[in-house]
Length: 97
Image 1 (tube, rainbow, N blue to C red):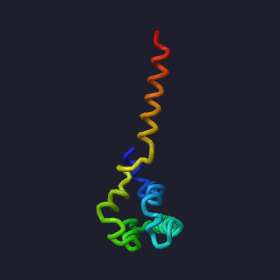
Image 2 (cartoon, rainbow, N blue to C red; image 1 turned 180 degrees about the vertical axis):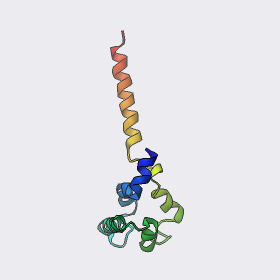
Image 3 (cartoon, helix red, strand yellow; image 1 turned 30 degrees about the vertical axis):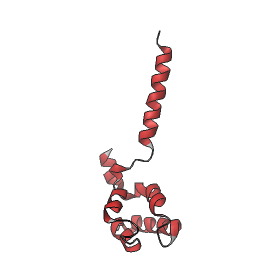
Image 4 (cartoon, rainbow, N blue to C red; image 1 turned 90 degrees about the vertical axis):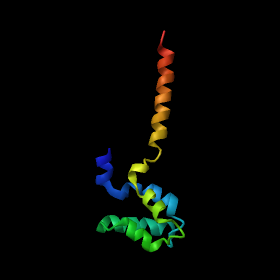
């Protein structure tokens, strides 16, 4: 999975970026979407592009780095996996004699 995240780059973080930074971007969520699309097209450094638009008062360098780390964000996958495992355990327990 780590190789896939590294290969995909920050593009997999669009949902997270929009949720955390959409309203802080000068162009709002639409402006941030445009920035993300441009950065993906020209393969520019997303950290640099975001820092140009979002001052440190909006998000610190550490917070920005954490937000852009795909290894720290997988959406709701952990919650969904836990719920599936719990449901499987319930069903399995119901089948046991």
